[in-house]
Structures are given as C-alpha cells and as structure tokens.
Length: 185
Image (cartoon, rainbow, N blue to C red; front, side, top):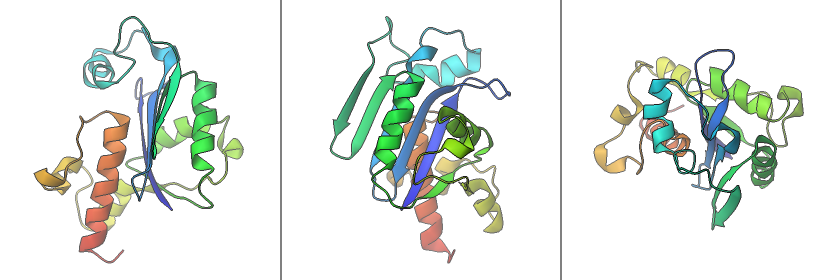
C-alpha cells in the first residue's frame, strides 16, 4: 500500500520536535495527531503564525485533554508522544507492506524514527526506506521548488491550509497521483 506522510515541527535545526504528524494511504485512509507536550510552548514567530495557528488542538486555549477519535477510516488525536506512537503503530498494523512517500523527508523521517525510538525500532510494516517526492519531481523534469499546489488544478486541491500535516499529506498524495497519471513511473 502506498502511504504518504507529513509532519510539522518546531524548527529547521537538530533540535526540531514534532508538533503534528499525518499519514494518508492511497485509498484515503488517514491518521492525524498533534503532540500535547507542545501546547503553550514558545515557538518561532513563523511557526506560530503559519503552523500552530492552523492546528486543531495546539491552537486552543486552554489546552484540551488528550483524546482519540475514529471516524470510519480517519483517526484523529491529541496526546503524549508515547500514545501517538502507539496509536500510529496500531493504525499501521492494518498493512502488510507500505511504500512510504514524503516530500523532502530529511527532517520528517528522522522525527518519525525518533518517535519510535530510532530506525531500528520502527513498527511493522515500516522499514528504514522512505521515498522522496521532491527527487521524483527532479527525475520527471519538474522543478522540485515548484509549490505543490501549483501541480494541481484548483478544483482538485484538498480542503485545508498549507503547513497542516494532514493537508500536506493529502496534497502530496494528490500530486503523486497526478504525476503518476501523466507519466509512466
């Protein structure tokens, strides 16, 4: 199963910490979580305005209680790192094999691995292999700096806002599907 993921995190440094995480499979089944330990923490102005402001729970005051909700094939939660990792492992257990895709996964993938205690502790069916959509664009002759929304027509964009992990994972899936339909990969 092809699975697309995105994370939002605190900064582009070695000290980055997860704010939110989202996975969307090729059939639209999804997982989205925000990390409760980040509620009320000071963040860089850009992160505060462009990321935290568009989150479901980290943007609320006062902090909500941790919780999980499942609506058909959509899982949502706001919880501790440990509970998010456990719920994500449970969500992933539905698959025998995944082909994992991210857009510029350098930070995202390291943070996902850290969530589970390192790349040697990833839950099944994850492996250390993650595919890079930006590199795929380069191989297809598309500038990898092209805004992803520009790869789609306005009527095919998902609902939501950039820099929300769920929106970005859905956007990545749609961009991949569009590229796949135009070219033989």
